[in-house]
Length: 161
Image (tube, rainbow, N blue to C red; front, side, top):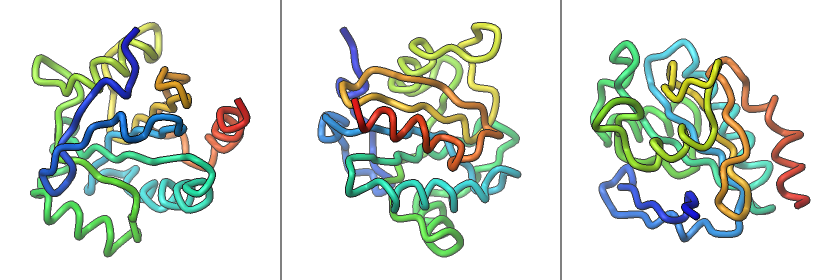
C-alpha cells in the first residue's frame, strides 16, 4: 500500500525532502498561495503548527501557481513573504502543480485517496487541505474555505489514535 511517506519533494530551498522523515506524525498538507483571498489562513496554519508541533503534528505548505496565478514569486520571495507577513515557521516546499499532467506525485496520491466534492479528484483552489494519519494514510480532504481552526477536533482525534 502506498502512503504519504513513500514520496519525496523539494524543500523551498531546493533541498530534497524524503517525507518518510515525518513517519508517525499527523500531517496537514496544504497547497498555498501568497496572493489569494485565503492567504490569511497562513496565520491559522501557523497557529495549528505551534499548538501541536510538540505533540506530533507537522504542517506542510506546497506553494502552487495554478489558481489565478496567485503564487507568482520565486522560492526566496515566497519564503520571505510567509515569514514576514504570517510568521510561518512550518516547512514550505518548492512551488508545484497540484492538477494536470505535471501534478506532483504526492498530490496525485492525496487526490486519489480523498476525493473532493461529488467524487472529483481535481483540486478546486488554493488552500485545499489534506489531513494524514500517523500511518501515512489520508484521513480527509478539506475545502479551501475551511479555516485551520476548524480542523482541531480531527487533529486531536488522529493524535489520540
